[in-house]
Length: 417
Length: 131
Image (cartoon, rainbow over all chains, first blue to last red; front, side, top):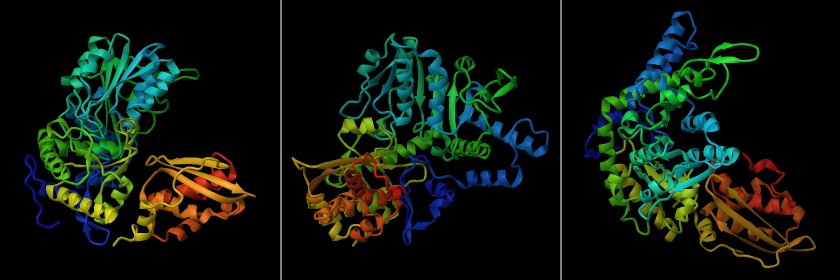
C-alpha cells in the first residue's frame, strides 16, 4: 500500500505490518488487502506461524508422560506458554489457566461444571444485552435444566450498559453474573469492575467474557477480582486455542467437564481420581502447537505493551468514527466517544443490506463482516436483522479507514444511482 | 460497473415484482437464512394445481430479493410438479451472475421456500441447496 499514513500514537505500525505475511499480498486482482475483521479473528505474525511450523518439524510429540527428549521439549514449551498467559492477565498461579478450544468452550465449561453444581431452581443468572451468543446460550441451557431465571442488564440510547440497573438487577437472588468487558458489536467498554464488585457484594460469582478486551487493552484478573474469565487466542494474534481463567479455590471445588485421558490421576473400573489443576479440565490431547503459538503471540503483545495497543486503537477508532459519521444516512451502533469503546464499529446504511455492503467492499479488497455477529438479541434491540462491522487491530492504519469510507460512497452510488 | 450488481438485479431489488401478501393464498411458507437473519415468505394461489398468483415478502440482501422477484415471475403458470423439479441451476441461469459459496445461499433461499411450499413440508426434501 503506497504512502501509509502512520500518524497514530502508541505503535510503530509500519514495522508491525512487516511482521504479518498475510498483509503483504494483494487480492481481487491487485488490490491491497484491507483486513477490518479482527474481531472475528486476528491475523498472525510470522513468529507465531513459525512456532507452529517449528513444532511440527522439530519436536512434534504428545505432551506429559513422554520419557524422551521430543516429548519433554513439547511439554516444556506448552507449559511455558501457560505461564506466559498467566503473566499476561496477572493470574496468581499457572494452575488457574486452562486451555480450551475457544471462548465458547471456556464459558460452557463453567456453565456445566460450576453451574450444574451451584445453580438451583429460582436462582437468577444476570447477563447483559451486549453479550455474544456464546455468553447467552450456555446459561439458557443451564437455566432450563435448573429452572433458574435469566435477567438482562439493558443498554441505553448511547449503547452503554445501564449502570443504574446494576444494583437493581444483581440481588441476593443472583447466583452468577456473566458479562462482557467489550461488546463485539458496539465496541462498548462495560463498567466491569462495578459489576464484579456488585456480584461479590450479594455473594454471587462473576464470569467475564474478555474475548474482545484481552486482545485490545490491559486486563488484570487480580485487579478486577473476577472469578472466571474467558477469551480466545486466535483473536489476539495466536492460533485457535481458548483460555479459561478461574480462581483456584473455585476450580478446586469443581467437577471435571470433559472426561478422558490427561484429566485423570488414577482410573479404576468404577471410578476415577481427577488430575490436579489445570489438567483436571483438559481432557484428551490438547492443541499443543496452538498453545505454544499462543505463548509467542502473548510475547509479541507484551513487547508492544497493551497500553500502547489500546492507545493506537483509541486513535484509529476516533478517526474512523469521525470519518464514518460523514457517510450519508449511516447509523453507527454504540457510543460515538472513542473513550467508551474499542475498535469495533458496526453500522447500518438504510436500504442497503449488509451483505451487499460487504460484497462490494470485498471487490476493493476490504474485509468486513456482515450479519448479526452472534448477537441477535442486541440486533433485535436496535430493530435490525444485520449490520456491517469494521474492526481494527495493531496493523490497521488511517488510510485503510479512508479506503473504507470511499468505498462506502461507491456502495451508495451503486444502489442509489 | 459490477458483475454482481448489474442493472437487472438492482432493478428487481428496488422494484420487486409480485411483492406483498395474498389474502386467500392456497399455500404459503417462510424460511430464513440463519447466517444473516434474512427471511422470505411466499404465498401462492392455485387453480387446478397451477399457480395463478404469487406474492412474496420479507427482508434480505439484493441477491435474495432479486432472486425472489425473478422467481415469482417464473412461477406463474407453473404446476406444483414443475415447481418441485426446479433446481439450483435454474436459479443460477435465471440470475446470470457469478456467485460465491456464501452468496449462493442468498440466491437459493427463495427457491428453498417455494419448494417447501410446493411439497407442503417443513423443509425441502431435495437437499441440493444445502451445500
